[in-house]
Amino acid sequence: MIKTTSSAIRLLVTGGAGFIGSALIRHLIRSSEVSILNIDKLTYAGNLESLSEIDTEPRYRFVQADITDRATLSALFDTERPTGIIHLAAESHVDRSIDGPSDFIQTNIVGTYTLLEVARAYWMELAESDKSRFRLLHVSTDEVFGSLSSSGYFTEETAYHPNSPYSASKAASDHLVRAWHHTFGLPIVITNCSNNYGPYQFPEKLIPLIILNALEGKPLPVYGEGKNIRDWIYVDDHADALWTVFQRGGIGETYVIGGGNEKTNLEVVESICDWVDEMTPKLSRGRRRSLIRFVTDRPGHDFRYAIDAGKIRSKLGWRPSESFETGLRKTVNWYLTNSRWIERVRDGTYRERLGLGTQVPPSSPR
Image (cartoon, rainbow, N blue to C red; front, side, top):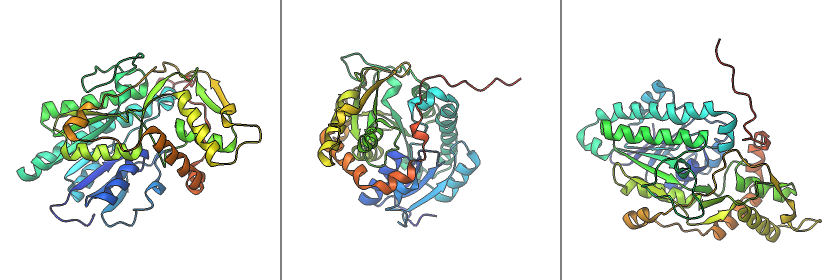
């Protein structure tokens, strides 16, 4: 059991070995007195090396477990007696959801349902003072809202319109969390965040993939014409926002989180090329922008995501610290100086061209 006092915040974090989860845990251990139990299944993108700097901290403990395993979750709740949950465990890559939706349904929907039921049973047995203190923060994505045209922004009032298996599974999990609050009274808060980037991100995602390919002089794949737009947020800013919402967000409320950095995919790739050119020796054949290659677009590729983060700014006083330029420079520099981490996670899976929708689904039972 984690060493703690009865009055301390004891957090159960699901998916804490993932990109955002590990950033959140590093942030909390460095900046607060919170104690953390990290539960992660350690699928391909879960990496405990992202937590190596704090893995001997007495306020931190890791357990490998699947959130669909109700018996294990119940036992951990009974042992650790958490005062709150931050739920990040999810399959999260759109292209993988196109080629293999089943894992997304199982983890994102069934896993969230299982966690909610275990949390509800635990919460109902708490003393009134502990019951009023308990809360569950469900971390979701802006992709549940679908696609924007060239104008407008996602807000907490935007209707759901998911367009990929991934976003549909996250939308379902959001609805489950909200229903467990309204039906059973479980104290929850929900966040929907824009695209994250920063250190320790698995190399199949756009920014780390482009950085590593640019360093090695490999082609830089860009979907379609590169005109699709995303709002980017530095992962440490997102971690800070999550902790702000967990501590001060209203029960039953939703907060959308964004960095205010709308960029086309082509602009992102070109910026990475320029930073890599500035920070490393140039290629013998010229600037790295020459490596850009436009490839077949993703099926159903949403055109634009953009966040109006006015609610979290006005109600909770949160603002991002990094601009896209400062955050991207930090990110490129991190990948330049952490080759050991990179080599240990590059097992080849991210090199697949995922998301073409050409994989044959499993045969139906006979």
